[in-house]
Image 1 (tube, rainbow over the protein chains, first blue to last red):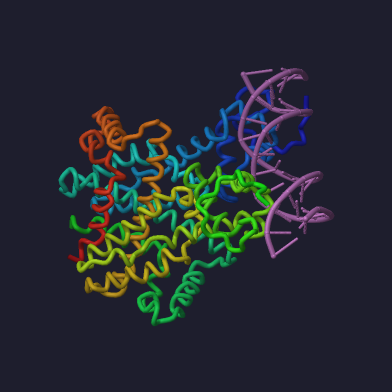
Image 2 (cartoon, chains in turn red, yellow, brown, cyan):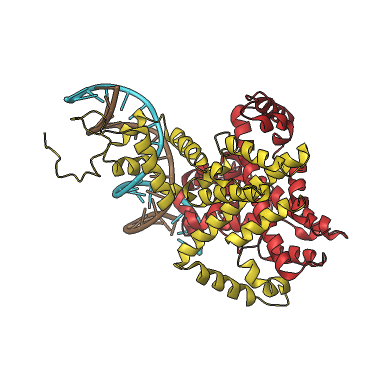
Length: 232
Length: 232
DNA sequence: ACCTGAACACCGTTCAAGT
DNA sequence: ACCTGAACACCGTTCAAGT
């Protein structure tokens, strides 16, 4: 015994069978995969790199996931299940719906790695199953008729997904440019817009500061309010 | 001469210098790359496969694009420049804006291959430069004040992008399921929703047919109208 | 100027072993 | 049951040649 005693232990919790090496698990693999995808992008998520980070041979992963596709599906479903819409309650239904989609958006942008998966996977998982049910019930309090309620919610989903995609893209460009501060980035964008030829782009020049604010919290809320305004 | 005479000629147009082999060109590569990405998905777009389809060695492509990233950027910019917003004019500004975003959406969903690129690239290209200017001018006719006009347009962009992403995902799932007809797919979705446990998902069960209509033209227009309704 | 071919370090995945 | 190692067909890209 005491073979690999030097290996640093991450707090001596959770060993199922004493005396045995911790080994792998679906959760450990999933967590590491999400970490790589979110920090270095989905393209950087490689079974070989993943295995390397887990101190394991590449093939070990196949004991837990049939193939990479299955791992990606699991990642997508897991992230989709994260937003806690119970915590979004409010006496005001309008506020409750806004809170819910704010939570969904925050969840998406804080997991940029899985965003590309959105173009191929449609969430029967959780985000549009349990959550949608909850939001539809919030919307019921608005007194809207059935079809309008359902369609308004679908529009909210599209808007939120699109906003997250744009936000993720902007952030990526911002990182490429090496700019840390969001305000600085916004100011640069506004400047660039304002210095366009005014005869070709009069509107973009005039509205530069607002257009440059495209992925702020304020802008997100503005869109949500538009989609819900006709019910007030 | 007459070396490869058997090679089928695609109508004898466009040879620049007679007697010389057509050779490659940025446009030829771009067109083939877009074809592969849209028909088989972005993951299937491989420099080696692309070169193979062009009857050329993989390295030939590097004479025209510095690397794959540059090719992808070019593809993105090209597709972004496609929608013809001039053709969307209408005496009614509301109709004009709807036409414009309908064109943008149609363009996106008919180029599903470049959708994943949206999560990393932010269109300074054309879609949100020349087009945005035009739409902002249409919105000016609504009499809205500056900030509201700019923010409404940003919301329209997010909505349209998100809708295209959802539509592409749904189509992908539909293809996986091997179902050709959109109506059949919608009916299946509605059935699946309606057969959920009514005590857990009362709203989803009741609103099943509308929820299943999430990526139709009608639903898209519904969302556009919501975003523009407060101006009527 | 335009294209090729061999080579390198990577990738997902199969198969046959190890303990 | 759980993990490894070698091998295969692929990938993007570099470098040195060919015409």
